[in-house]
Amino acid sequence: MASRLFFFGRTPELSFVEISSFVASMNTIRKDIVEVAGSFISNGTNLTDAQCMNILGGIVKIATVLARTQELDPARLLSHFELKNKVVFALSGYGLDKTTITRLDQEIKKLFHSSHISSRFVLPKEGSVVSSVAIVKEHVEEVVIVKDKDGYIIGKTTAIQQFSEWNERDYQRPYVDPQSGMLPPKIARMIVNIGLGRDSRGKTLLDPFCGMGTICAEAAMRGVNVIGSDSDKETIEKAQKNMSWLLSRYRLSSSIRLLHADATHIDEIIDKKTIDAIVTEPFLGSSRIGKDEQINRNKLQKIIKGLEKLYIGSLKCWTLILKSRGIVVIAFPEYAVNTGTYGVKKVIDRCETLGYTKVLGPIAYSRPQAKVKRLFFVFQKKI
Image (cartoon, rainbow, N blue to C red):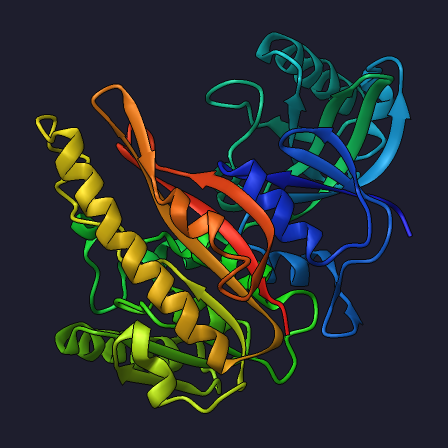
């Protein structure tokens, strides 16, 4: 089997952890590209590139490795394209400049012309990489060139992230609330995958702070049993409408239960030791915290103390409903306020006494210029 290149999106650290859940080993080419020589396995099955792309949230492109070379020869690059009556092609360069890509495109076009083949190349609008939108909408055949320490890796693009479907689940569901800073579906899928691992068969995933159901939706797309709960009844009603839309739109048969419940007492309505994974973004504090430049240190510390009490109470409760070695993937806030950073350090320090082993973290995620950063942690229940 030829090795493949996996290209990460805007959150390479989280993407790396996600793909690590499915492959035995990989070679890091750059911080945003890894090479996988073995199989990509999910639920005991070796997946095609298209199937991989349907599962992963943090991968924007997959390419099969065709060659390694010391020099970029236009004739050799041309040989990787399918020769037909008309060719629409593109080169994307990682570690190369746009000038080099443009020159190679022009030389390849001349070679096509000399062979009496009509061709058109698509240039990157910015930088040296052609966008996924252009590749899909213009039906482009793409060859990727990755600068490596030993020369260049040449690959052929085999799968592109289905950006239209991700956008649909983000913006077209019945209820969205961009003001609340909800997780994007791609990030939700990544942490769901981290929580479930390579074998999700028969598993049950819980989001005890489900909000309008983004994490529940992405877990349902993986075909697992899903339970979501929230302390706000109106929010649960909106989440229910979002789940109904999802099940209808994607013709899913996943089991989804939505409950009105407090995360610190959810053991009262969920049976003991029945949950395989808890994946959640809990309440991160008022949305005003990051916007209020006048907030003082004492007030912020009181807010953090309240959040720590909530998180510790929740983690204690969850040990009762998690199976042995069950996984928790959770986001904690880190605030960048008044030239300082503040977080819920007490929760991390106490995870061992609460009955968990810290497996990973912190893995940072934030939108550009955000004052509140999410730090993802992975805990495993000890017994």
